[in-house]
Structures are given as C-alpha cells and as structure tokens.
Image (tube, rainbow over all chains, first blue to last red; front, side):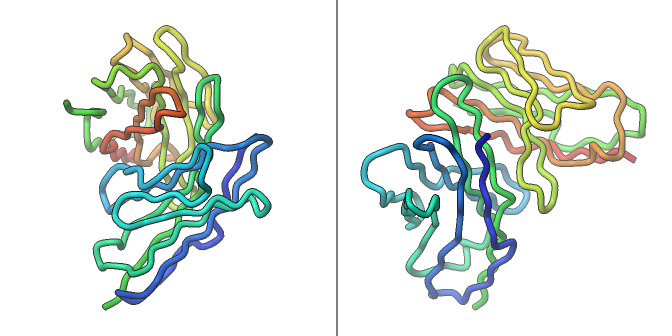
Length: 114
Length: 113
C-alpha cells in the first residue's frame, strides 16, 4: 500500500529565508507525486506534480520539488519565503491506473515570521 | 465554471441526527472522492467513486454511506452522527492521474455535539 510521511509537523522560517519541506513516500512502482497547499479555512490547491521525466519540477508561487528515487523523497523548496506562504502543506502519492487513489501525508504547517 | 461545489459549508448536528453532504463538479471528471481532515491526521479517504455507478470504501468508511447520483454529483451521508465524526469534509474530483489530479471543494465544517 502506498504511504506518505511528512516528518515535520510545524516549521517556522523568517521572511526572505529559504524553505525546504520534507516528504518521503512508499510505493512499489514509479509514483505520481504531488504537493498541495491549504490556507486557513480553505480547500487544497495543487502546487506542483511529478509523473515522469525531469526530476526537478516547478510549480506555482515560486515553489519547486525534486524527486529522488534512491531516497524515496519529494521535498518541496522555495528560495525566498513570503509572508503569504504561511499555510499548511501536504505531500501526496498516487497510483496510476485503476481509480487513481491519492494518499496524503499528515501535513506541515508553515509559519513565517517578519 | 465553478469547479467542485460543496454544500453546506457549515453544519452543527446533535448525536444521532442524520445529514447528507452534497458535492457537485462541472469538469466532466470520472472520479470523485470524499475525504475527512482532522488535526495531525492529514486527509483520510472515506469513500471514492471511480466512475458513475461505482463506489468503494476508502480508509475510514464506518458510519458513512455515499451515492454517486450521476457523473456530476457524489453525496456523503451520515445516518446517525457521532461526536467522532466532527471534522472538515472535502470532496474532490479528478480526471486521469497523468493529466493532473485533485480539484477540491472548499470543505464542509461539521460539528457533532
């Protein structure tokens, strides 16, 4: 069965600092990987996705993520964080074929301090 | 183009009451999903529907039922609400995973007293 681990429950960074959110997945084949962002009281918005090809993927709002098969990781990065990036971030892994079920991690809450 | 629409946005129930959460999508997606979100537990799949006419259990189906009314609509029913069902419920729809996955509704915040 597929699973996702986000080891950091809560991260605090200063505005302008770089950010890396960790994600490790478990899946038997090449996974479909996603990062979503959820602002308070809102639904989830897709930041970026990886299916195949270039292992460094670019997303919206200046985010990027790198797929590392050897480490079963898909970490999310941003070079310079803005106060508006404060939100909860979810990593997710999906399976191709069938019903395309996607499994979510438990989330990392990002706090940005001035 | 409204995307995924959930109703109601908020609901308070008493233990034992029943209610139905409604979800509709206008993106012609085949697959639809119901998740619940609880603090520290991420999103957990309750039920999903891979296509019109089919439904299957997810990770946490107990206490819930679903109906895929047509391609657009997928409802979630709580027959006898319990305090453990206090949560935020999200509906999502998707097309083929390789074309992207997961358009979410804005959520329904449910409290069971």
